[in-house]
Length: 610
Ligand code: F6R
Image (cartoon, rainbow, N blue to C red; front, side, top):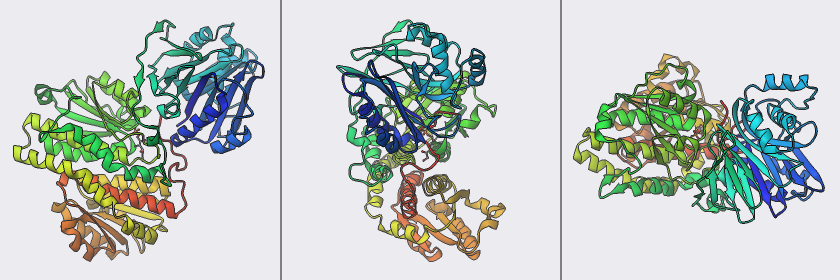
């Protein structure tokens, strides 16, 4: 969602801010803006609806705005249409204070009324303008003091970057329920909504906690708690390379990230396999604690939720403990049965998804222990969990997740095997066999990726369809959910996933001549049943693309129009192989339809509003 970058130092700020915003583009946005402060020129603001390039052109690639400090923002509209006026920075009536904001100020309407009663006129429809006006209202020569007062009045979620024309030597940053990091340099300091915006300049960062306020100058950064008492912060070193967040010769980040899956899987799996055993040093749950668990709750959104659906099949089978999978956005409102014997498994690539965060806090309040599976180191979900297992996928830039999804699945396997071994719910021989199969998974993914032509060809046959159904049983159904989401989010083709047995309870009425059905038939025990479902849809005119393992490949080919084979593996690991052709299919279809693959319309990479 919205992106923030701020800079104060000895260089011209605007080009650095534009570059930072470019690196945040992947988060999703519909307008962008800059505010740069120069003691002589004063506060200069430029804002533009549309792509960042419009803002870059407007400002002569930043050259037209002079000054060594400033703020940049990419906005994903919530309050008010995406237009120039509603873009950030929002500036107070006097022109003295400029604010960029991620999140939502929930009580903005009341505050606006209050400020209007004091004669202050508003120009935008945004909640953010209220913050700028309120700061100005309280400003008496000390920005930090004004911030302290405003924090007591605003409610909601916010990451704020603030500049004041009267104080050209400091930038202020504030955080509550929306991520914000500080970047440290020798003669500059930065703030940003995520590390990618500063990584070109510094790898030394610190993560602000909720309620913290930071004051940045060129030569220092001081963090305060919500009472404005100074606090010491730990500085972390970011150890991934800048190239990880660049396209490196690929046309799209999504394709690059699909291709990076073998490496991401190796990085996630291999360090956790030692001498034929799964070792999870980061999880402190003991056998006794596991034995006390009466249920697991998997909490997540979107693709991470789809990992959760696969996890239910995998973990219940391995652990014989009931597993509930809940959409994070529903969790708080469904009166969940959570006790001190519940383990909440929270899955999130970004570690900042607000629904997931809110749900895990609720689970904590109800007594659950929290174990998270997160990709972004130091993210809020990671920091608020009892145990964190990182997916070492590296930065994921494309909005549509691929390698993060795959590594989340891998962590579920590791977790399932480790817990099953501790609990003794899996025999030694089966355990050893599964560990061996797990080790081979990255190479099998590599094998699928080494031959993409067939999938590209199928995409060229089917890219004009306007309705696609994914059907599967058991764990194949879980992967179907993800395949369907991949297709619809980047190609804008209407698509749904169904448990194949459900089809005849309603949905089959939608199948007609030329409807495309993707049949996932990898789960060997259910192959014949799935083939019956294929016959049902074929009898009604559907075109069928089928996916199965090599052992069933020849048989599948007899029943479908287009067949895709994946290598054989342990049935529980099938999702990791099956998802790859579907990612590629979605990618090529979107490519052929001319879609903006890395930045699909209306979507944001990190969803930080409810
Ligand atoms: C789809 C996708 C989203 C995310 C969802 C949760 O390709 O990426 O559905 O999976 O927004 O995000 P995280 O995992 O960051 O909590």
